[in-house]
Length: 185
Image (cartoon, rainbow, N blue to C red; front, side, top):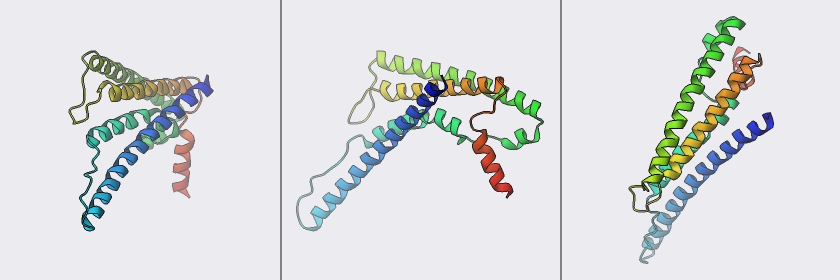
């Protein structure tokens, strides 16, 4: 089961990275088009007028998808911002209780967000809602990506809750300790 969960988190990170690459390619293509048009103007040739329509809407949707899809993987890697000073000051039993509470409460909140995002995407799909830009695309697609990211985050939080409940360290503890020990030296 551990291998399957780790593959799920890795796949979500790869999808997130693919969204960021798509943003970079779209913006790069737009910049390249402008360079071509300006170069043509300089030598006296009529520019083509190369423009990627609805670039802002595409980029915004891809960024939202990338952000949500990366949540679980970054949690497991220890890249989320946490207040570790309080955890480090607590005795092991207090830290255990606080981590259980934090993961449990976070999992419940994340599950609620995932449910609402899934419902939101479903309603958008039912009513065929489309983006407001020149190039219209179904809003359910980026909303579904956000919902998927929230669902995977919920799974990761439950995974961490179970790890702590079984007396094991959370996944991010090694990277957190490496940062803390690195500052102490």
